[in-house]
Length: 214
Image (cartoon, rainbow, N blue to C red):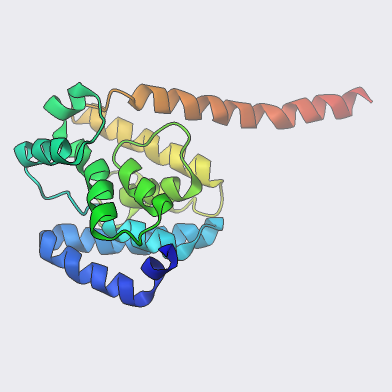
């Protein structure tokens, strides 16, 4: 059933529906994220059709006001930190979009919906598709984030997880610079992936030590 949502016909219909929901600038951003997600998927061996669809629909609920976002989260039964619900409702647009899309389009696969849900704040244990959508959202060329051109240049030159971590680092720096609030789980996500990155860097050194001891 999930295959039905990966056709060109479904994608074009989704574009029409999205265009009616979002402001023009947000809609153009969504198209750009979709294109970038395909580029990343191609570079890292992720299903391009799933990346295309998740990238397109990631901001399905982005144009709700703070009050409407809170109401929508309660209506859909989003499980979230109370701090996010009360103080950072805009971060709820990923989870609410995933739940609403699952209800409106049951043919969309769970992996695509999860990538949409996780694109706002990321989580520990991201799948490759999750990382593709999160990264595409931040580095697509219409975004105003400083330094993302350098991240785009690393596509295919570093691992997907390394690219995701570099993107996540830029996003955190942007939030700090602008004195904006962060999701309470941001530190946990950062620590998790930094530790994984350190583990990856340590492995070659151990191999070299073993080789040198022979």
